[in-house]
Length: 172
Image (cartoon, helix red, strand yellow):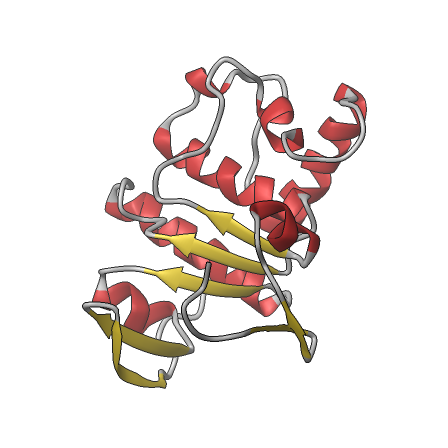
């Protein structure tokens, strides 16, 4: 349970008690440690937590539409266990967007990526922001925050110690 603060979605105070509540409100969370089922396909992982029954064709069409929106190309029939780390990270973002997230919370999305993969990911995330998706980027990498964030809040031991606007220096 929260110990302070409020969540407002479209100007209305909302209560978020579960991941399902967040998804229903259009808030998607991408955890630092992947929450994928390795034995399942990309399409099956995308549909986890969805409503209704699984249809491979519908899921593949959804993935193609999301590829156009994000530039993240993933084979719907590929087993997650066969994907490299960068593809798994992209899949986590696709999963959130597939459930109509318009707010993405990304917890250390570049922590497990090589520098070129991290820069590519951050550039694509910036493209999502340009397209109207709000992104909360949780990172320990000051350079990433300075290059890609519009606003920065610095927390130390759970307390806010600095907050301010950034001039985006890297526009892909």
